[in-house]
Length: 156
Image (tube, rainbow, N blue to C red; front, side, top):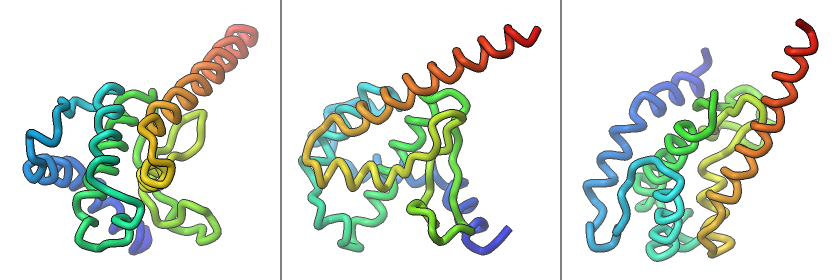
C-alpha cells in the first residue's frame, strides 16, 4: 500500500466523523431536510448546496472541511443505495481523471467521483445532478444484473 492509499484509508475510516461534525455546524433553519442517506435527502441536499455555495467556493480552502463532509455524505448515500458499491481510490494511475480522489466503485457502472458530482452541482446550478446520476447507475446496474442472471441460468 502506498502513501496515497494509506491516506485514503484514514480518510475513509473518518467518513462518519466528518459527516457528523459538519451536521453540527449546519444551521437547522438552513437545512430543512432529514439527512438519512436517502434519495430524497440527496435532492434536498442539492438545494442546500446551491443556496450556500458557488463554484468559486470549491477553490476556497475555508470551505474544504464542509465540502469534503458533504461529498462524504453523498458517497455514503450512494453506497447505501447502489448494490455492491464501495469506496475506492485510484492512487497509482496518474493518467486517470479520478487520480487520488475518493470514488464510489460500483460493480457494473464504473466509478463515481463524489467531488466531481459536487463540482457538477455548482457549475450546472441545478438540483437534479445526484438523482440523475444515481438513476442512470441503478438502471445500468439492473440491466447488467439481469444479463448476468440470464447468462448464469443458461449455463446451468
